[in-house]
Image (cartoon, rainbow, N blue to C red; front, side, top):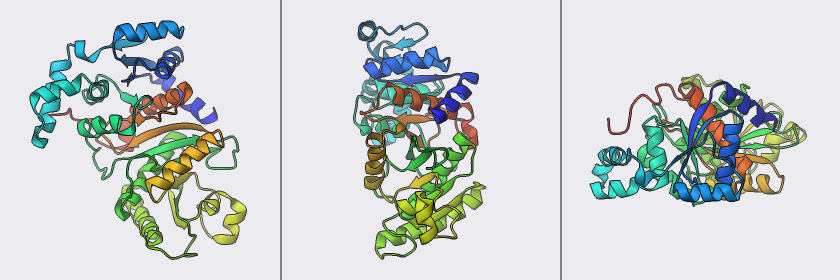
Length: 350
């Protein structure tokens, strides 16, 4: 709770509006209640009002201070549909299809954020990843200067020797299955930016592999080596104050005794607080192992590189996980321009 406690305190000073498209999901209802009770801002639940109220009553969840909105009944439905049609017609979308899409809470919620009627969106607890990412990527464009949209899991473990006082930023664990050299470098830089933004400490970024500094040979190792060099260059160009090293095995990245033997001169090895995985298989597997076996607090996926803040949480997330993700999205919204200068300046379809 050390890390998320500091996030909650910051958001209490700058409350935000977070939309939860899965308004009838019990864990989301509980998270929304906590969000309001902790004075973090206004939670907006999407879905059938009658169903939301029935489930809230069954869970003894007080809906005071929580906004309920049913997309098919909203006065914004046709406006949102027009906006969606204007940005997707070149892909063959027809107007009736745009209207139908906007009755879907995930699409409606993303459009609310795009149209500045909410400050961030959190979904995914009751649906597969694509159900959230698809509307997100269709409606919200990439942030100015961002070349890649990716994601980050933020893990908080009991042992403070790891990461930044027990906090690890792990990317990409949810979006790009097999990143190219350039994509991997972008993931490293954008995850470092998020880490610096949230914990105000210098990111120490380890690009991971099954090899440490040439201890094995394989094309995938060459990709990590090239991505490390490119990440350093990109970070310098963007004035991102961070250290990068790779390729590193995860024990060399996290355990000082091992790092001292394998890479004694590294500024990152043994003290990494940002872990960048070579592909989605390794990132997703590692984050879920840490989450369930080490019983880490897991917040994410935090989506990076888009014009508005968003999170796509796991179907395994509990109410605390969802609350944490919502709070992080809210804190991003407070000064999102720090992460992505120029973000949020235009509306979809303009």
